[in-house]
Each structure stands twice: as structure tokens, then as C-alpha cells.
Image 1 (tube, helix red, strand yellow):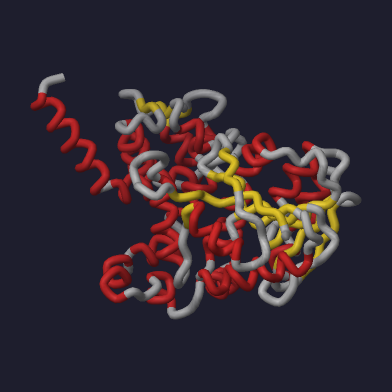
Image 2 (spheres, one colour; image 1 turned 60 degrees about the vertical axis):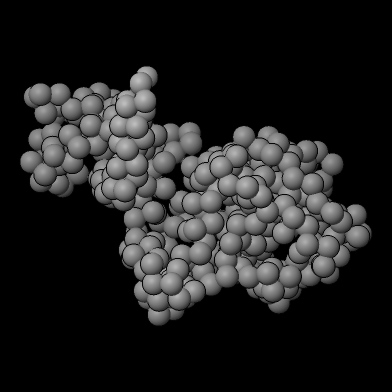
Length: 343
């Protein structure tokens, strides 16, 4: 490659990044119309595809052609739409799937909040609250359809987070796992399915854990996983050998994290294990996964004082709340398991 080619390639990459939001929206529309699932069994004409998903055929053709230009679907001269290696990840049953991620990133809450980024950077305000006048979780409670998309996105992690954690961490000596802020139980489902000796306790807000019974019942875990509603800023249930905080601490300020960690420590016996499952930022950006820093920006957009953290920052929080110095266990996903013991 010549210097000129390298410069042009770099410019083209940058030009695409400048317009990447448009590609994201096109992918989201294709996911909303279930295009990837509809062409899974073979090519379909755009006319029949439009009839199936309730779309305008000429508009749908233009959408699919534009996506095909990025190798997302294949469209031939006769308007037949086929699956590609990239579009296959948009199927709901893909392992892992990007279907729910594509839907979530352009929901009105996320899409609109990102539109307030410049003002937030200039002023230090929270983009989401600037846009909607209230925090994200009360907003979701008022918009149940959007909340359902968010919950499915968290359940079907595109990074295959739950499976990656189970593969990377040794749960063999643990009898009871308490998942603090565990949502609909997806992480506990993965842990308990892989370790038949263990039992679980799912702990989260009442409206959140109300969505868990069908998921646990489908996995045959109803008898091995109890559900308890509550507020981890008030108390955390005792009785576990291992407590998990999966994508919880990055939502909150250091002060609020200290409250959560103290409540976990109060519930634990000395020697009990705490597992913080989060992206861990490197001290110098650019040496590992750039998506970790994009995740940090999304935290900044959604919540006041929310952030991804370095291992050193987790060490400080844990040391102040009665835990040992942590060790970070890498997984095959972007998430690490930060393990600390109750002292």
C-alpha cells in the first residue's frame, strides 16, 4: 500500500465514522422489521418481504440496498434479499445476537439523549436528564415498550457476557449466589445451569424481579433460585457465599457505589466473595478494546456521575468498604470479573 493509499484509506474510515449514526439507524429499522429472521431460510423478493413486515416495498428495497453496500444483507439486481455473514448476527436466535442491541441503541431515550452530548460536555450536565427532565429509570417505568427493549438487550448481551463469566470464573465451591441488582435473572440462570450444586437468590426492585419467573421456570430453576424484591441502597440479603454485582456500579457515583458495597459487606461473612462484573478501563486508552471507552461515554450520557472505572479505582472503593485488594479475571467478552474477599 502506498502512502497515498494509506492516507485515503484513513480518510475513508474517518468519513464513515462521521456518518456512523446513520448506519446505526438503518440497522435498527431492519431489526425492527425482523428482516434477518425473515430471510434466514433463503432469499426473498423485496415485494414479499415488504408484505410480511408491513413495509413500503420501494423504501424497503432502498434500505436493504444501502445496508448491502456495507455487507449487511445481499441484494441482487432483481431485488432478491439474502442473508450475509453480518446480517446473520441480527437474527433473534443468533448466538450471540445483535438484534436487541440494534433495537436498543436507537430507542427514543438513547437516541435523544446522545443528541444533547455537546451541551453536556460544555456544562457538565447529564444528557439524558437534560433531554427528558427526569432520570432514566423513572423514564423507563413510564415507557414500558422501551423498557422491554432495554431489558431484552440486557438479557441478550451482544458480548455474551453471562456465558463468558461462567466460563472464566470457578463457581464450583459456591453454594449460594446472591445476584444484587440481578434484573430478570439472566446471569443467575447461566451460573445455576452450569453448576447444578448451587442455589441462587435474585435481588432487585419489585418491578424488575417481576419479570424473572418465566425465565427461571423455562430453565427449570424455580426450585433452586429464590426471588426477593428490595433496594440495594437500603439493604442486601444475607446468606450468600458469593455476591455478584453485574453492570451495577458503573451506573453510580463513587459515593453511591460506596453505599452499595457497604451494604453488600454487611450481608457477607468474612471470606465471602464479591464479584464485580464490569468493563475495566486501561490506564492509557488505545491498548485494548476501544468499545470500553464508548461504554464509558454512554454511561456519561445516561446517568449523572456514572462511569466505567479502572482497576485502581475499584481497588480504592473496595478498600474503603471492608474488602480485600481485588484481582481482575479477564473473560472472552469485554467484561472482567473483579473479585474481592470480605475482610
